[in-house]
Image 1: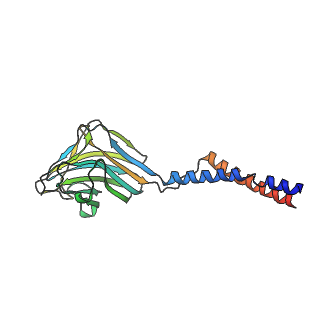
Image 2: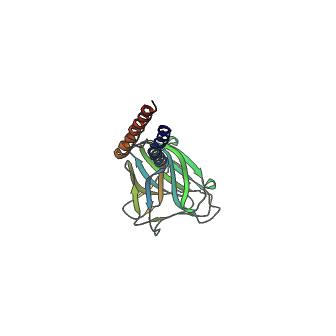
Length: 232
């Protein structure tokens, strides 16, 4: 009876250690599933782009590595609800661009213009290279689109991501993927937009956590062995 009671008292010993190891695993899994911010241009909106019919504005950026699950938002407002046009993501901007450089496109009718946080694209897989987001107002509309921005924008970016410059285009024949754009040089203004991605890279466990998980495993094995010896 004495031995039986002693065995029952010792059996739950490693339970808290097992719970601790499970907690670490769950924490690491949640961290790996969170979206990864890549590029954010924001600030106090004092100087943006009013995109009239037949005009387009663009922002550029560069990836030094590939990202998956990429989402792009911008600070866009339709001044006239009936305004029509489109948003393009391209890998080349200007007269040398071809139709093959157009990666994704959305018509204004498919976008909810809510100002900051207006979703342009989501779920994209983008490799290393140059990119530009183009907002083009249709030739057939009479309303304008406001792309909010600032002359003193705050820019933050992840490693492997480079913020480019803004461009503006005014064409009497309407926007085409190979329309000519004029760079907006200096710090005159920057349009607000955000690029994020799904963090699909396997997160390396920090060294202290690795050691802790190793200790948990060794202690669990040791306690199991002790219990087996005690039962003999």
